[in-house]
Amino acid sequence: MTISSSLNAGVAGLNANAARLASISDNIANSGTYGYKRAEADFFQMVNAGNNSGSYSAGGVRTSTMRLIDERGALIGTTNATDIAINGRGFLPVQTTGGDTLLTTTGSFRADENGILTTDSGLTLLGWPANPDGTIPAMARDSLAALQPVTVNGNQFVSNPTTAMKMAVNLPATGTVAGADGAPISQTMEYFDNLGTSQKLTMTFTPTVPAAGGSNEWTMTVTDGATGAEVGEYVLTFDESQVGGGTLASVTTVSGGAYDPATGKMVLGLSDGPVSFEIGKPGATNGMTQLSDTYAPTIVTKNGSAVGSLVSVEIDEKGMVHALYDQGFSRVIYQVPVVDVTNPNGLHSMEGQTYRITPDAGNFYLWTAGEGPTGTTQGYMREESATDVAQELTHLIQTQHAYSSNAKIIQTVDQMLQETTNLKR
Image (cartoon, rainbow, N blue to C red; front, top):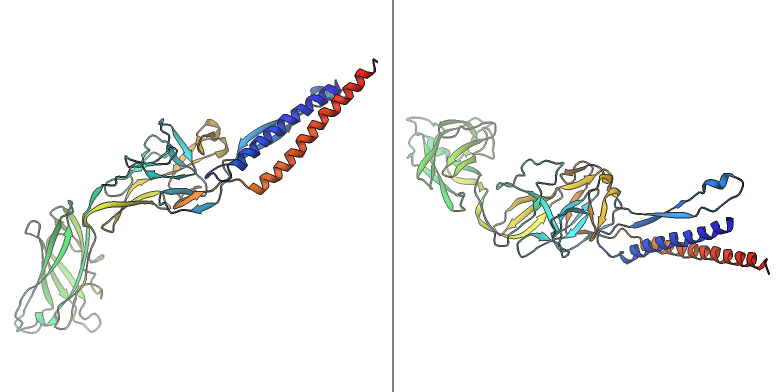
């Protein structure tokens, strides 16, 4: 019985080391595979129940192989903006051609013929679509149902309407003294409507000319060129003191959006919607001024642009997918969340370095990248294999010697059985 158990233990040892050799072979073969997670074979002693009776029977060994999904490889730079890796914990949500939602830690995504970001192996990147203004709507973070394929269109055109304008000019102080001609001064600014059409906004400054002395007062009227209608009228009074000389003292709203002295802005109701218009705070030197005898615009800026055509797509560290347009602006079109599970090693390994959520993995949650326990998303990056070739070669040597030793056990048992057989002769 004892000799037979030794034979069985030797055979179990051969099988166990063969299993370990298989995992080592897989690791070495995938040392250049992006996102590959190392497999590891663990040995467990098997004990016979009768070993307490005074005699000993070998129980042998069994193996358990698992993939160490929580181990991460180093990140390596690439030249593709939509090569994505996670710098830390978490997974990217992807979809197979069959419609299954899986997880992966890295992928090289490129737009296919339909504009969908897809890998060569057919994995589609998933995310939440943004609103037209680039904001992400509130989504359930414990569900994958709202995720959609990240889609970009190479022929996509979008408008980038103006929502904020800023203007500061220096008005001539000589225009508000007795005897001045009272001629108005005009300043025109361009803005873009909701359809990307260029429109004009005209500010007309009319001085208040007193009978004697100086008024330091101008009336600003704002006219929308899209409709020809006056959208605001404001009385600007300037400080003539030694400390604040030439800066705005106060702004009185006659019509239009109310002026807010705390921000130096008013909201103008233009043809396609409200636009924030900034002229500066009272006492600020970087706003409207009245100095000397010269008119000069000092700040004339706006946001918005003409209709833009999509030229490229990038992802930032928060998982926001930005569409970049030829007019020089960008817009968020999707957010790719980072999925975290309680036990990453409980995920079920699938082909192509993908993983399926299982009960063993625990609960999952969709985080904004870089928040909570998750890492940031990195564009122009791929995750290398987690295999350490030098370590695997060391394990290979150990496995080879262990296999040979177990084979020697079987050979020894065979010789002992031969001796037992010879006792009859």
